[in-house]
Image (cartoon, rainbow, N blue to C red; front, top):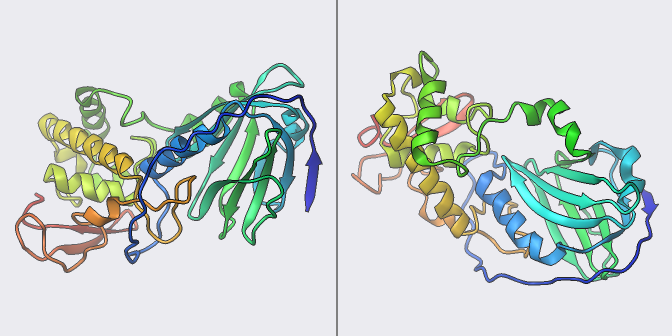
Length: 311
C-alpha cells in the first residue's frame, strides 16, 4: 500500500442527497460496462456529496489504479473539488490546486466494476477499494473495483488532447439537437458497409453508447442492427438520433441500468433494466408485435432484435 499524506486548509462541506429508488437486478446476458447513463448518474449523485470539498490525503491501494500522473499526486494537497462531470464513459473531477494554482483533472474509467461511494471519516477500505480520497470535511471517497480494470489519470487540462483516447472521442449524443446528431450519423454512415450497430458502438462516431443503448435505440427507431450503415437515409438517421436521445434520457431519469455490479454513488440500483425492449431478451416475445426476438453477434457483441419491427 502506498499512502500519500496531503494537508490543506479547511473549507465548507456541501452535502445534499437526491432521492432515487432501488430496483431489482435482472440476470446479465453478457459482459456489462457502465455506459453514458450510468456514468452520468454516478456524476450527478456524487457531485452533491463532494463538491467544494478539499482533499487532504490520497491512498493508492492498488498499483494498477493509476494509469498516469502519479507524480502529480502531491499537487492534490488542499485541492478543491470544483466540478464532477462526465465525458463519454469517463467520470471527471475538476480540481483547483492549492499547491500550483493551476487546475487539475482526475479522469476515471470505470470499465466493468468500478464504483464510487462516500463514507464517514475513519471508515476502513473494503476488499475491492483501490483508491481513497480523504476530505478535510471528514468524508472518505472510495473508488472500488473488483476486477481492477478501471483506472484513474491525474492530468492537466492541456494534456487531455495528448491522450489518444480522449482526442478520438466523437460528439456527445445529448449535447446536440437531434437534427444535428442525425446529420453527424448520416455523414459517418455514408458509404459504410459495416452494420449500423457496430458504428454506433464506435466511440469515434458518437461517445458513450454501448451495447445496451445501441440495441434499445435501434429497436425504438425500427432499424435492424444488421443493416449496412450506408443504406440508412438521412430521414432514418434522424429517427435514430431522436430514438437514441430518448433512450439515454429515459435511462438517466431511471438511474441507469443495474446489471451485476452497477450502483450509483448513493448505493442505489437503476431501474431502466426493468423496461428493456430487446437487450438480453433473446427468444422472448417482442413487446410490440409478439414475434420471437432473434440473436446475432455484431462487432463481436451479443445483439438482440425483432426481425419484424426492425428492418
